Length: 152
Image (cartoon, rainbow, N blue to C red; front, side, top):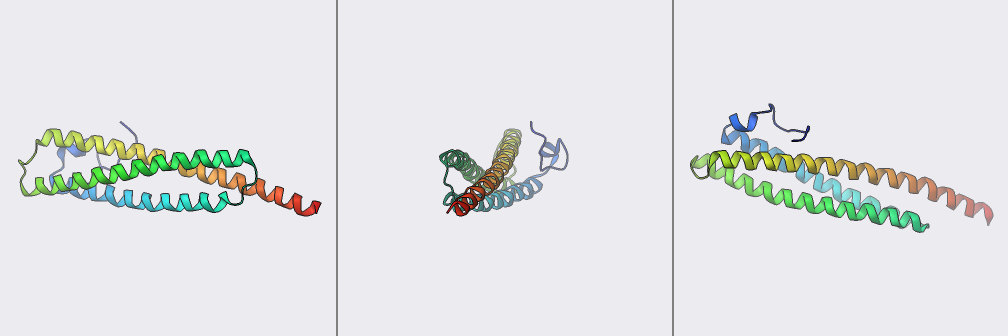
């Protein structure tokens, strides 16, 4: 289990009713959509500064980060798909509480939450790395550019 939790109490999932879990899952979906937009911004940031890179070492660093971001993109898309399916099941459970095995479903809900927590950690690490490398490249490339201008 991870430290990051969106539920109010540790045992919330097992005591919450279907409507409460539906609301919580909608919150997760909203967060995922926000992260999806933020990932687009990070890709744009990398693309923008990629054109300014003159050193091969920097190109390699940016390519590694881009690959990591693509993995986080896939993670986000997969979680959105699972969350949408989960919302559909919850809607059915609200209408018919006996549609699925409640215990099994709540375990699946916890697994989804753990996957979301891992995604958030991965996303934050990648975002931090994108900002770190773009700052480094911008500082370093500006210095190279200034030295080239002075030498001309």
